[in-house]
Every structure is written in C-alpha cells, then in structure tokens.
Amino acid sequence: MKVTVVGAGNVGATCANCIAEKDIVNEVVLLDIKEGVAEGKSLDMWQTAPINLYDTRIKGVTNDYEATNNSEVVVITSGLPRKPGMSRDDLIATNAGIVKSVTENIIKHSPNAKIIIVSNPLDVMCYCAYLTAKIDSSRVFGMAGILDTARYRAFLAEALNVSPKDIQALLLGGHGDTMVPLPRYTTVGGIPVTELMDHDTLHAIIERTKVGGGELVKLMGTSAWYAPGAAAAQMVEAIVCNHRRVFPVCALLNGEYGMNNIYLGVPVILGKNGIEKIIEVKLDKDEQELLAQSAKAVKTVMNVLDDMKLFN
Ligand SMILES: NC(=O)c1ccc[n+]([C@@H]2O[C@H](COP(=O)([O-])OP(=O)(O)OC[C@H]3O[C@@H](n4cnc5c(N)ncnc54)[C@H](O)[C@@H]3O)[C@@H](O)[C@H]2O)c1
Ligand SMILES: O=C(O)C[C@H](O)C(=O)O
Image 1 (cartoon, helix red, strand yellow):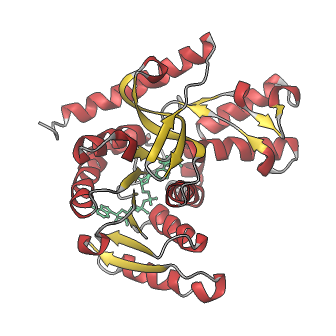
Image 2 (cartoon, rainbow, N blue to C red; image 1 turned 120 degrees about the horizontal axis):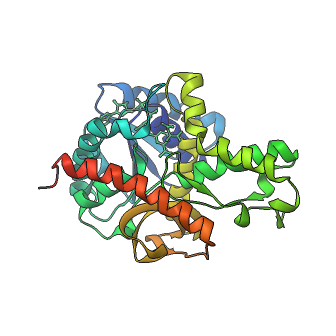
C-alpha cells in the first residue's frame, strides 16, 4: 500500500516520518517542487529505519507525479505557512492555486485516493480541493480538529497534572480563531472536565486553544509542524488500517448541523473509505450560536475563493 505526502516542508516531512515510523504501509512518497529537497529528506528518514525499526520505504521526488500512482491516501501540505502578524486567511491568494494544481495532478494519478488537506486556510482549501477533484466529499477532507483538540487536551493535562492520554475532547467549527471547543463534551477518564476545573481556568484554556496556532507562530516565526504532522499521520493510520476512529475532521456538510455546502470541523468516523459517517451531536443554544459564527467566518473566506474565479 502506498501513501503520498505532497509538500516536503516542515509539516509534510514530519507527517511522512510519522507514517513511516508507524510501519503500516509499504511505501511513502514525498513530493515537492524544490529540486532535491524531498529526495534528501526521504533519504535522511530512511536512514532512521534501522534505528527505529520499520520497513516502510520512503521515496522523495521532485514534481514526479508518476511516482505517486495509485496512492491509497494523499496528504496535501504544499503551500505557504503564515508569518507573525498574518492570519491563516491571508494565505489564500497563494495557496488556493497551489492546492488546485496539486489536486489536479493527484486525482489524475490516484483516482481512488482519499485526500487529506493540511494547507491553510484549511476549511476553504478543502473546498478548493473538493471542487477540483470532483469526487465524493467522503474522500476529500481536512486535518485540523485532531490538532486543535490535541492542544486543548495538552493544556488541560498540564493544568490538572494528569496524563494527556486520559483526556477526551471535542471541538467543532472552522480552523480559525472562531473554532468551538466543547467543554460539555470534554472528559478526564470519563469524568466531565467541569467537575474537575473551575470555570475561569477552563475558559482561559479554551481561549488559549483558539489561538494556539498563533502562539506558536509568534514564538517560531513560522507555523507549527510536529503536532500537525503527527495529527495528519493519525488520520492516515485510521484510513489504511480501517480503524473507524472517531475524530474531529474538516468535512463537507450537506444538511448536518443545519448547514449546507460548507467545510467545517465535525466529529466523523474515519475508515477505509475515508469519512464513513458524520456524527451529529446535540448542541445547546450557545454552542449553536458559536458554530454559526465560525461558519460565518469560513463563508467570508469562501467568498474570497469565489472572487479568485479559479473555477469558472
Ligand atoms: N491544517 C493545519 O492544522 C495546519 C497545521 C500546520 C500547518 N498548516 C499549513 O500547512 C502548510 C505547510 O506548512 P509548512 O510549515 O510545512 O510550510 P513549509 O514552507 O515548511 O513547506 C511547504 C512546502 O510546500 C512546497 N510546495 C509549494 N508549492 C508546491 C507545489 N505546487 N507542489 C509541491 N510542493 C509545493 C514548498 O516547496 C515547501 O517545501 C501551510 O499552508 C500551513 O499554514 C496547516
Ligand atoms: O497556525 C497556523 O498558521 C498553522 C496551523 O493552522 C496551526 O494551527 O498550527
């Protein structure tokens, strides 16, 4: 079984490395436009196989889509990351064209692939790939929710001084500062988090989670890659192993949560066919309002994509 990762930058290379270390596929192809970079990083990674004890072959290529033929899953990470002072939405002018052209090549060479988008602005780049690929939306979706809930869970684990393994959480909405962490659906070893933490501490953690990407951009001058790469690799694993994991994933909504024709983060079952099912959880009035605000922010960026006239 073959998996392709497009973009051999910070996130793409980390993701390829995480997939290889899981030892769940025969081959990972890493593709970039920069001459030699994917080849070099792949060779470096492959030289960790005798140390980390895996068999997955890693092949780096420069724009050679033949090498990606018949991939089961393709992760698209190509595109600019933001710099301090930028919002993810500022990236659309460059990244929409990149995601469109990469998706065209991918679908030509792997017509049956499941496509995981990572490039930002995430929700609208998913929509851009969906319009380009012209395949069922169960096979085109995005990674953000696993990352955003991982940040939320890590902050909670730190504050409660417990293992992050025991924290389960759900988060809905767009992958922007309007994302909607749901304390009502957050548990620690099965115990509602609201029983273990006072309101103000929980509120501060939620607010920190919402701007978690920006916190890292400020520190590093570019955006995060370890957790994003690991999160995308976890989605690949759920698909190639048909684990039917329940993850928050950026999916096209067609009536779910009362929304239509918009990509937003929602809980799904992820298995061999991609999105096997979108799960609708009950929301109270406040949660519904927050989700509506998040959808409004994503719609604004969808309008920018529309104005770019890439699809007419
Ligand atoms: N969804 C998320 O949660 C999440 C998390 C982190 C980063 N991101 C996004 O992922 C993207 C990549 O981030 P990064 O830190 O890896 O950036 P990076 O600059 O390190 O890597 C991007 C790579 O894409 C390559 N590239 C550009 N155009 C290409 C094309 N047409 N074909 C193939 N490769 C191409 C570049 O050469 C570069 O190597 C950014 O848009 C960033 O905002 C999203
Ligand atoms: O913050 C960014 O620009 C990258 C990514 O979306 C993240 O949340 O880390």
